Amino acid sequence: MAAAIDNAGHKSLLINGVSDHVHVVLGLRPAQALADVVKLVKQASTNWINDSGLTLGRFAWQEGYGAFSYGHSQLLELLDYVANQEAHHQKLSFGDEYRGLLKEFDIPFDERFVFHRPLELG
Image (cartoon, helix red, strand yellow):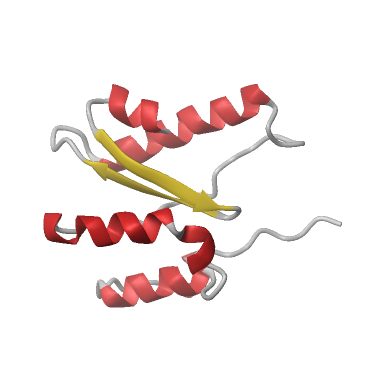
């Protein structure tokens, strides 16, 4: 992911996640749309995961993504938050976290299109 971001001329600052999602903190070069960067990162990481045989079946990202902008003065707090995802999500699920961010940033949303855990196979 970092290589795809950096090779596209952006600056990867921190990438971390847990089993059901990934947070990417990056410095976005304004000459390229965020949607194009997300598409590039998803394609590159999907190919790498599948080519490396890291999953039993074919890996694919869920459709969509969330993107939030933070000011430079908030960067250290953001990096700390992303670095500590495992501990953070022991207290709060990703779905609840995501809904909270949407509300905090005053982004209207339709519950049908908010993150849902994949069905457990068993």
